Image (tube, rainbow, N blue to C red; front, side):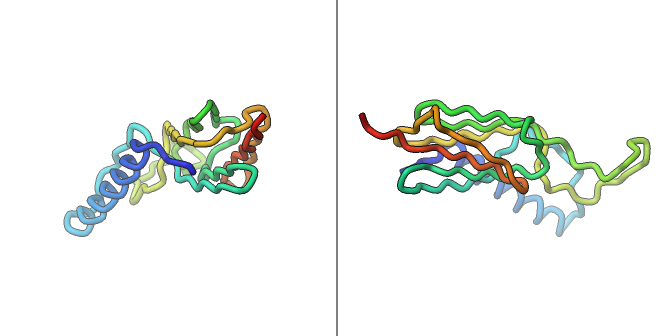
Length: 141
């Protein structure tokens, strides 16, 4: 059984509420001026298989070397910084932001993991903007 940290659940609820408020505000008063968040939390899927836990993290727009993955008993931490998407080839070219919904800047996600993970056999893969963390379950003995 895997439990996501309670504060991560609150962060997700806060993000949904903020997004809903932004949508309501925009409908009635026009676009909201751009305001960067302090940090964001990437979306995660966790799968428990017979012999391992697989975690899939949405990391679109990131280079694998910019990610930090730390695994300790009972806890998986993923952090890094996603650059702001910018369509300009020339930074001196003027640009007006019409809408900005893609999270960027520093991020951190902590996932509580139960069960004994064999820390020496953990593998990571990065493909098509998804980070896969494969954590074999340690065999008793």
